[in-house]
Image (cartoon, rainbow, N blue to C red; front, side, top):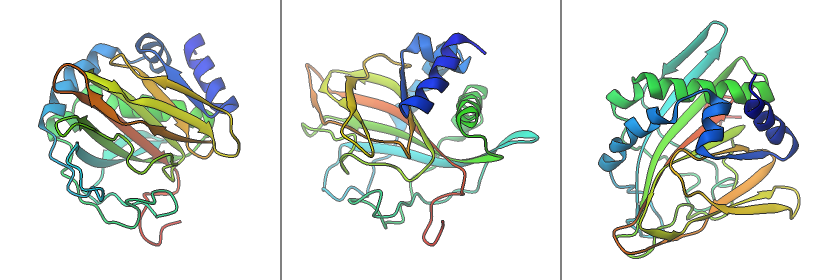
Length: 242
């Protein structure tokens, strides 16, 4: 195990989060950052999110679901399903059955994509051993075409899963977008801005709450592209699920 990987696992256990530079993410996950760059063009073709209850048109996204098993090792994309969260975790959009367009087949079937999901899941399983993960993958683009873009319109929140990975894919012509991570049971927290493509934020969702402040244009058409992966041991979130 690399020193960076051991430190990342230790931070998740001790603090509930780890923020990794592109170089640290490459070392901790043993995944070349160049592979993610090769996927970045797909963020140019995300459909608009039609479910924003604040009336905005600043978010585009795709969403697909996977199951990662460890014995024997396997990653399976499941039939397309909606994204659903209870209101206890998402006061703004909770309780809505939201059908988003699936992640493009050439992306979800690529070796880079599959490696990213599985190595991240394997790292989380070293923190909390499980037989399998139920993974939801979200491609997000937040833009400033209407002036303000809100990465987390629901505010500070937990996602109702076990672990979350946020990968910064691109950030262009924007200011703002400060990420804030706070202890779910106290007031301790940190604030930072994800600036460099390939930076990764890993969260133990039971331990911390998180949010990202709005972005504004800075000298051009601004975008903030992220890949958000959630890992849950108890199955996909759905009405009536545990």
